[in-house]
Image (spheres, rainbow, N blue to C red):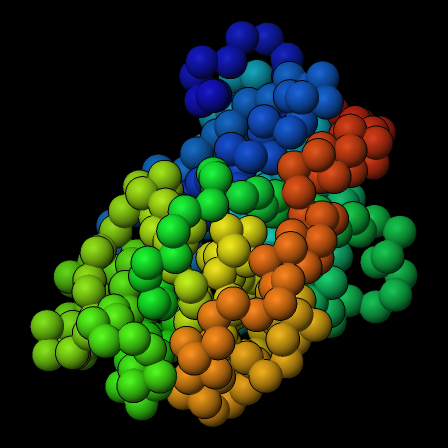
Length: 352
């Protein structure tokens, strides 16, 4: 729902940064959950700015776009409460509101990349009436003290199996959106070493990266034996591949949340991964499921997974681990805790 489509007051306005497909989907899912709880919701999407040369300028452009979207929506739909999706969306807010985030700039904008964002973010986090991190790890990276606990509610992203199980006729798959950050080069190196552990003709499927992204990362998949590039896919097509893959393999240099890994677990894949800095929500789950598939030597972990893909009860145990992240559990959290807390405060209004 766009602010221009809203008529009259709404309970919750979500200011959606929407800089990635995943962020847009997360905001739509939160809006849907709030509506199932009985709230009226408007989504105000920031207009995508043009490309910028640095992360500092990129974040500034997105923050300005989010401010413009929020200002227009506040005037159009008079919300009772407001949620800024990501700390970037809140950096130049026209009025205070709840902030939902996977990881703060304090964690993912080190050094010169976050010179202005980190102090601005700190001020916003300190003023926000409600903090909505996706994980405890994301909250920890803010560096806020224990006094913030009373205004904090962890609201993860929902994850569900995408369909009926399929024949596991694909050896391995990786998601490579932002290939440098996702460590695609490290995944390819591990695949070269581990491939002999798979059956003849086995393939590694690379999804989520455009040709431009791959070129920018200096990666030529055509030169990689046993690797098939499927590019960017619609969610149903991508999830169908997950249901066919035996192993999801990844080596992120930093992981702000890891929804792709959680989706892979939901669809029955073994997860072979390196540890990574950041609030990597799937990492402790992966360690509990099979510690031998989580190590710095990704080739060794991947070889184990390829050689013994039918690990006893792995998929069933993964679904049990994901129970707190299933839609029904999160709907209950939204209805019983989030919505009452959002509506408890006064109606936001533009400053004079």
